[in-house]
Amino acid sequence: MADIATHVRSVAEEHPDEVALSYQGRETTYEDFWSRTGQFAAALDDRGVGEGDRVGIYLPNLPQFVTAFHGTLRAGGVVVPMNPQYKSREISHLLEDSEARTVVTLSDLVPFVEEVRADTAVEHVVTVGEAVDSGTDFEAFLADDELEAVERDDEDLAVQPYTSGTTGRPKGVQLTHRNLASNAQTAADLVPDGIRTDDKQLGVLPLFHIYGMTVVMNATLFNGGAYYPLPEWDAQQALSLVEDERLTLMHGVPAMYNDVINQPNAAEFDLSSLRLAGVGGSGIPIEVLRRFEELYDVKIYEGYGLTETSPVTHFNSPEAGRRVGSIGKSLDGVDARIVDGSFEERPPVEAGPVDEEETDLDEITGELVVAGPNVMKGYYDLPEANAEAFTDADGKRWFHTGDIGYWDEDGFFYVVDRKKHMINTAGYNVYPREVEELLFEHEAVADAAVVGIPDERRGETVKAFVVPASTASGGSSDGESDGVPVPDVDVTPDELKQYCLDNLAEYKHPREVEFVEELPRTTTGKVQKYELRDRDEDE
Image 1 (cartoon, rainbow, N blue to C red):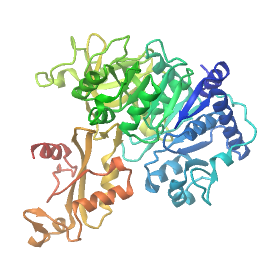
Image 2: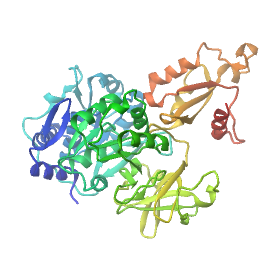
Image 3: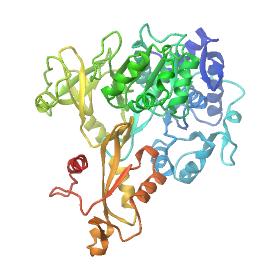
Image 4: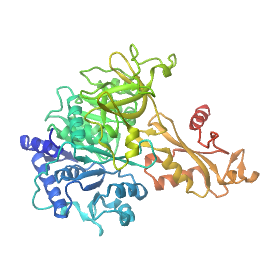
C-alpha cells in the first residue's frame, strides 16, 4: 500500500486536466493542485521542516487547507488539524503536545496563536487572508520550485488529530498512512461503482474533523473526483451548490439534514443529481431521514466511526443493504464484536432493530470493539491510555469504542448509548469536564456539572447546572429569589453562557444554564449526572 502523497500523485499523473478543487467558481486541475502541494512541501523543506515534523492546520474548509494538508504529507511531515472555532485556551495543549513547528491559519486567528506561541515549538506562521506582521502570506510562503514526494512507510504517521476520548484532556491520535489510505479507499468503494472522475463531492463537513478529511476530501482525491469545499455550514448555500453544479455526492451530520428539511423553500431545490447521501457523527432521527428522502427522492445511508478508526468502521451501503436505525455492517477488512465486561462476545439478536421499550437491553448489549487496518497506532505518548484502549485477543488488536450496542444475525450493528458522559452535539464531541473547569474559574460559581440533553436539531446539546457561590457558602435568604438560588456576584444564566462562549468553541458552550442549590453526589463525591438528566426530562 502506497503512502497518501503517492496515491494523489498517481491520480494527478493519470488525470492532469480533471478538476480536483472547485471553490467559489474557480477550478483547480489535478496538475495545478499537485504542483502547489509541491511548492508548499518545498517551502517547508527550505525551513527545515520535514520527515516526522508536525504542521498545524488551523483553517476552515478552504483550498489552502487541502494544499497544506497534502503538501505537508508530500514533505514527509505529520498534519495536526485544529478546529478554527478553537481559541487560544484550546489550541495551547494541541500545539504544546504535538510540538508543531509550523501553523497555517487565518489572519484573524493569528492572535490566538501568538498568545500561546512562547510556550510552544512554533517557528513559522503561514497566514490566509489579510497580511499580518507576525505571519507569512500563504502565496508568498510557497516556493518557486517543487519538492519531490518524500516516500513514507505504511506505518509512518500521517495525521495527528486530537480527541477528548475518555478523559478531559485532548489526546493525540496517531493515524498512519495505512490507516488513512485504506479507509479513504474503502469509503470511496462504498459508493455504487466507486467514486469516479465525473463525481462532484460537496465539502461541508469540516476538514479538521476526520469524517470530512477521510470520507469526503481524501476519498474524492484518491479517485479523481472534484471536491467542492464550503468554509462554513449554510443550508441555502449548500442546496444551491448541489443544484447549480449538479453535485453527485454529499455527507453530513444529522443537524445538517435537519436544517435542510426545515428551510422554508426546501421543496424548491432539485437534488436529483445526488447518487449518494451519507450521514454520520451521531444517529440521525428517523423522522429527519424520512422527510429528506420524501423531499428529494434520495436515500440517506448512515455510518459509524471514530477519530481513532480513521474513521469509518460501519456503513449502510447501497450494495450491502440498509437497515434504518442501524449503523450498518462492518466494512471489508474491519472486524467488529459486541463484548461484555469479560470480553466474551454477546450473541446476536434474530433481527434488529429491537423494540427498546419491550427488550431488556442488558441481556443483548455490550461494548462495540473493532480491529482492522484503519485502527490507530495509538495515543501519542500516553501508554496508560493505550493499555486501556486496546485488548489483544484471537490474534487481533481490538479497540474499545466506548459505545454500547448490539448486533443481529444479518450482521447489522446498533448503538444504543455512549459508555462515558461524552456529549455529541451535531457531530462534535464535547467533554463536560472542559466546560466545568471553565465554569469553576468564574467567581460566581461554587459548583457545576455539565450534561447532554436532547435537542431536536443537534441530537444533544450542552446544559450546565450551577451552584452559585452564595448557596455553597451558606448564604442567607438574600441568596434566593422565588426559590431559585442567585449568586452573590451579579451574574445571570445568560452571562454565564456568554462567558463560556467567549472562551470556548461555539458548539461547546452551554445552551442552557440552571442555578441549583446543590448537585446530587455519591458518598465518594461523584456527581450523579443521570439524576440531572432525569431532572431535566421531568421538567
